[in-house]
Amino acid sequence: MSYVLSCCSAADLSKEHFEQRGIHYISFHYRLGEKEYSDDLGQTVPYKDFYRAMVEGAETHTSQINTDEYEAYFEGFLRQGQDVLHLVLSSGITNSLQSAEAAARNLAEKYPGRRVVVIDSLAASSGFGLLADLAADKRDEGYSIDQLADWIRQNRLRIHHWFFSTDLTFYIKGGRVSKTAGFVGRMLNICPLLNVDVHGKLIPREKIRTVRRAITVTEEHMERYAEDRLNYSGKCYISHSDCPEQARALADLIESRFPKLDGRVQINWIGSTIGAHSGPGTVALFFLGDERVD
Image (cartoon, rainbow, N blue to C red):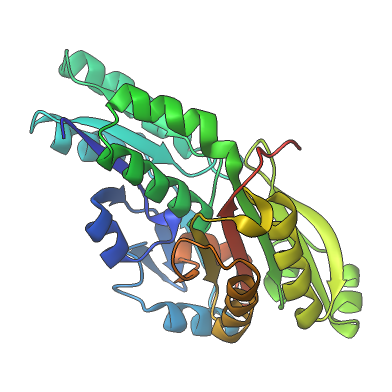
């Protein structure tokens, strides 16, 4: 192709998945304890070790990709005569969009006739990954860079994100849940259910008692919003932060309710960029459905 499809490591797909689909990526950065790492999809610090360190008290911080890094990354493709279509992590949770757009403007002067098209995914984690994967399908069908950019903009709000947490520790630590509410939530086995709105922001929606009920309610939202409802024949992704049993339980329920799925539910890890904020115990569901409206 005359262009490359690109995103960032916070799309929470495996390295093998990116390679198989021909999707390029650039990595965010995170600090674990006293050491800084590239979010290299768990290659340097396996995800289980990352979440174990969080549980044991290691401080975590993340840093976005700056303009210079984006510029060097994009230039590698432009030098080879390839344009770039790059999806960024939702502007609702990071300022990465501005950095990528600034890099694209700088390179437009240096490489006249070449293009870097930057698009806000309005998505996160494997919802971001699902959008990139669906874009790869369209690229493989022969879409031009402009056709694909238009398709992404028209369909990005159809990617649904529904997720719940079984551990409020890091929600309390990050200030998203007060200490009082967190104490009550733990006593009552509350699992907050959240989703991503039209602005790409994480919004609390419900407080659900027990993990079993949270799994059921999450699946019910897919029944309510998925394209063609129970006849949904698209892809379905789940990501989790070191709680594979709950992720598998949700996947099993979905596979039993949606017999026409495109393959089995794909289960991924929530990577270090997103996981540094969610902490362990989060399960997230992603699918294609009605356009998000709030």
